Image 1 (cartoon, rainbow, N blue to C red):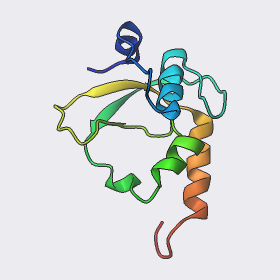
Image 2: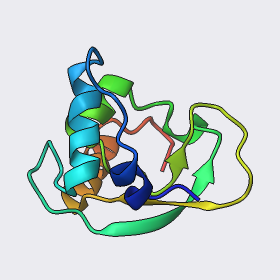
Image 3: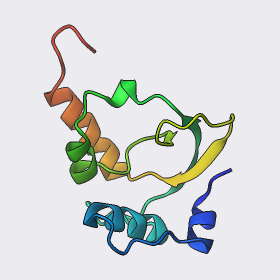
Image 4: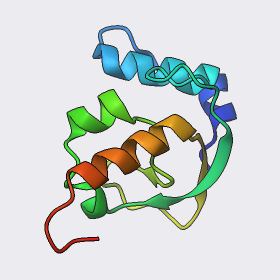
Length: 110
């Protein structure tokens, strides 16, 4: 099982990584959203291997407006055994995602 505590015990090396990744790791270590400055509660969520439901949201939008709004843990296309991951969820990211999806809703799509 993947968890925030594991990440804290084994922090990834971020030197030379894109600044967005460094911010994301720092937020995962501190529990504070780098976009909204909000403290984020922990949540256990299922592993998920298919991001097709999120594919209509451009990656740059997700990482700049609501990086902590997914209630699943996506693992880069790798097939994972059934399980859960402990992640942070930002309530302000959830709201920003909801607003973005509402504004960019495709016709005849809920």
